[in-house]
Image (cartoon, rainbow, N blue to C red; front, side):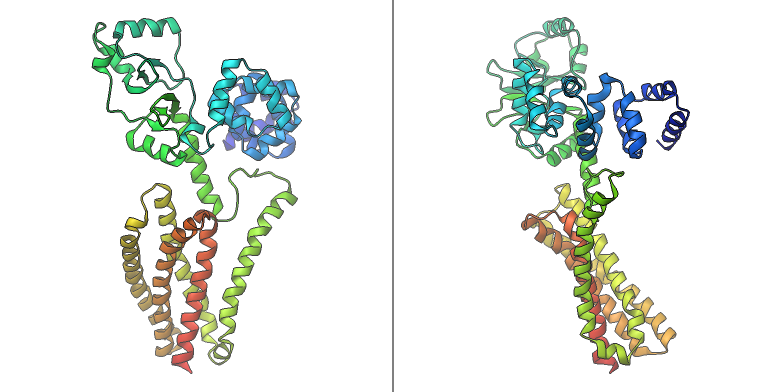
Amino acid sequence: MSRQIENLREAIESGRQSPVRRILASLNPAEIAGLIESLPHGEREIIWALVDPDDVGEVLLHLGEELRAQLIDTMETDAVVAAAESLDVDDLADFIDDLPETLTRQVLASMDESHRARLQQVLSYDYDSAGGLMNTDAVSIRPNVTIDVVLRYMRMRGDLPDHTDALFVVDRYGHFLGQVTLTKLVTEAPDASVSDVMDREFLPIPVSLSASQVAQRFENRDLVSAPVVDEQNVLLGRITIDDVVDVIRDEAEHSLLSQVGLDEEDDVFAPVRRSAARRAVWLGINLLTAFIAAGVVGLFEGTLDQVVALAVLMPVVASMGGIGGSQTLTLMIRGMALGHISAANAGALLRKEVAVAGLNGVFWALVVGVVTTLWFNSLMLGLVIAMAMLVNQIGAAFAGVGLPMLLQKLKVDPALAGSVVLTTVTDVVGFFAFLGLGTLLLL
């Protein structure tokens, strides 16, 4: 990517459009979107103006929501409608959500009735569900026909939807019965019946299943595509691996960026004022939690005046607790996202994490205690910091396990708020334990 950006900038600086067009022609829409997101505003305008009109819809689809909205605002209405018409139904459902209402009406008006009905069906489901992910282009067959008939039907169609690895078997009412892989179709005898070769054990995906659970099912079963059914087991459409990859990528970005108060849809080259305003919120929240920790330190002002070494060593206790807690918190958030952690096994995980924290706490408490004793020539000071570190490590383990569970019950995203709250807990526990023990044992 960095090399492509350099080549593009050289081509732009040359003032000639033909080298830029050649570079863009060698890239697919997703790669073009990645390049656009990697360029400052002025260079983006030049590249965007040279994108092939046939690729505009796909490029917009792969951009972050903020940048996509900005580019759509610069487009003529006819260009937006043309871009929408080039997209599959599932992709169009994602695209149309970001359009102004007037443009949405024009896009819908440009569709034929059947296409519009399929789009409205997908839009009727939650964005973050199997229904929101699915495409309605599933190819279905009946169980009582022969493989030869199916093969002739496929030749008559001329092509199949992308990522088709199986055909779905339904009865006369559209109820899902099973599936037949393309491998089966080309290796079984032509006079064999579909009902004889189909996989009746294949489990379809309920339309209400969450996107993250869909991704888990694809991962666990190594799926390329899967049928989607409603509550009556009627086949509605299918989900393909390209949509699931998008879900996995979005969840990974969300987990990473939420921990520092950022949104995965934010434009990396957004205007300075807008970016500063967004980040200011979390800086303010962090400042508030810092004052809480400072308030705890203030309770022991007299102790710090008499034992200055405590002020020197305070960051050690807080830092070690923060690292230990962050490790546990990260494991918890990942496990919860994958569906590996629930109320049923949270107790066992808590015991395990406390045991790990205890072992690490004892080891590093001894190391820091010895170093402190030699540094300040005070055995009691070494004992104080060792005990405080052990307490903070165990407290961090409790917080790392308990906070995500509590935040989830409160309908707060653990990835968004967990690290901020955890830092406060480990700072408060660490300072209170260290300064409290110092007050008891050193004065």
